[in-house]
Image 1 (spheres, rainbow, N blue to C red):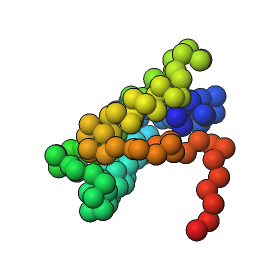
Image 2 (tube, rainbow, N blue to C red):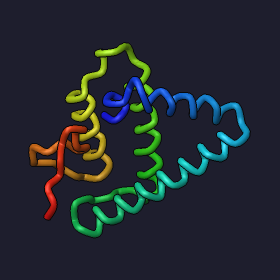
Image 3 (cartoon, rainbow, N blue to C red):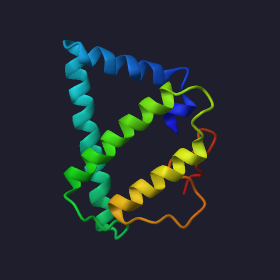
Length: 125
């Protein structure tokens, strides 16, 4: 959803980062750091979800984090690069709900989106 929302701005910069990382040098190190930190954050979320009884993990959290991150990169590249209007946010969100449910056993019974929309404002506690 992020890549759709920021398709004309930040998403294109991310594609450039991927391209530059393929060429080596400083961008390769930046990309490696981005991957490592992203996986660490995903592992933290997976462990927290498991600890709180939201997730039933059948694989090592590190393996699941790698799968989720690889899928996120593919989805972001596709959403940012596909012809404008061909990728619909509700369809993409439905796919991600199924993907996350398949990996974690999580089911969302609520009406809230997995990733809040840009115009959503969270109220303080």
